[in-house]
Length: 73
Image 1 (cartoon, rainbow, N blue to C red):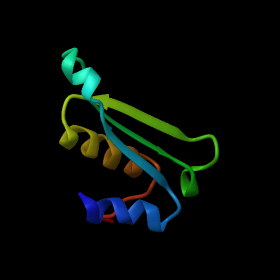
Image 2: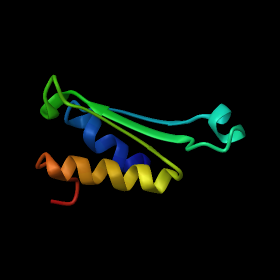
Image 3: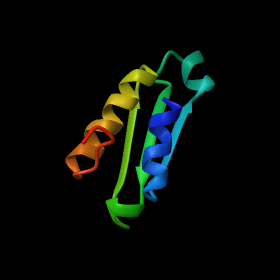
Image 4: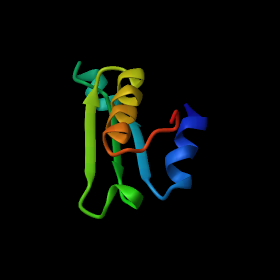
């Protein structure tokens, strides 16, 4: 995951992964990913709240691909 996180950063995209302990205690979706900036544009802001870190990563990769950015291209 860390290697994949470097790829958007090298292109100027800000990426945040977060796990919220309070949400976990309340049995709510605890994982979140946010991306913005760089080649995504100033008005682009993407956020996903999901139950697992893998789901956040998949969501992030799908969003980047929808913007013609992919570490696998």
